[in-house]
Length: 387
Image (tube, rainbow, N blue to C red; front, top):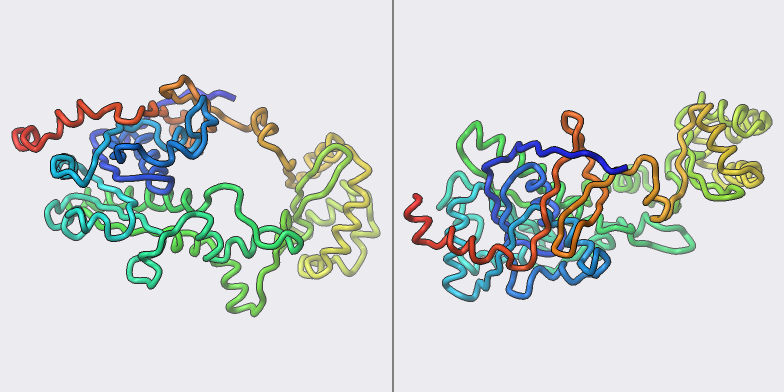
């Protein structure tokens, strides 16, 4: 459905200067813009390279449209003294400065976090990198898929037949952007109490490594490498995908009560319930192959409509294995419109509903659309006069 929307204005009058590119930092600043912050996106003269990732959204990059709503675009060439002075004038008035250039780049430009925090005590500075400062890999180039592999996420994704596999979205970038957003909000709350800004450092590796704690603990303390199970759960059975006459369904049994209900009311198979190989979750996991085969034998003869009706009546959790075409018409999907230079684009709505409404999503800027007004507003002389 297409939802109505509102603007929370929670970050009204907050100025964000973003020296950003690609995905992670733009995710964080798009959320800040959704909440009412003014976000100035500084782009290299040829533009953020995410503008060229694809052309699926009315001839524009789907990545860029999704991540850069509600921002002002200003082109800068930081090899030029006048543009560097312009950026410094912006930062002097900013509440938040976020950047994800290569490690060390802002230090060489005189925009390093330590220096900025000394000059502007109320400023919140957020540095986004591939690996954490102080680690041997800090200066390495790091992109989403590389980090998925490096941190072990790819190793626990896929199946034994397929081998390690990529998660189908830029999960490291996206979660890092969300982590940066949360940290910035915490820093704003802290500044409200103390009057002092903060220096935040967040990396792709650390963010997704934190999400890897269950397989890590399984290996470190359980002594076993997690299996690649595709659409199955490593610790729960049955919890996986099964073929129906007209589709694939993923179902989940979370308790012994549900297991009994599933066997008797959905499958109509009392013998399966009485089989002592499957009378606890631990045993079902150990005997997953035999278990899934028995379930599949019954479900393959039934339609999606019949099975989903039985599961719903039994209050057993399930989900259809959807294509993107299925998602387009999913009854639970909510869409919002974004104005772009090429016309209106519908996107899936951000997840948080505030007082019954979704956020207003601002317009996606053309490259350099705000060059002239921003250069007038933030010339060093103009900023000095305002100060």
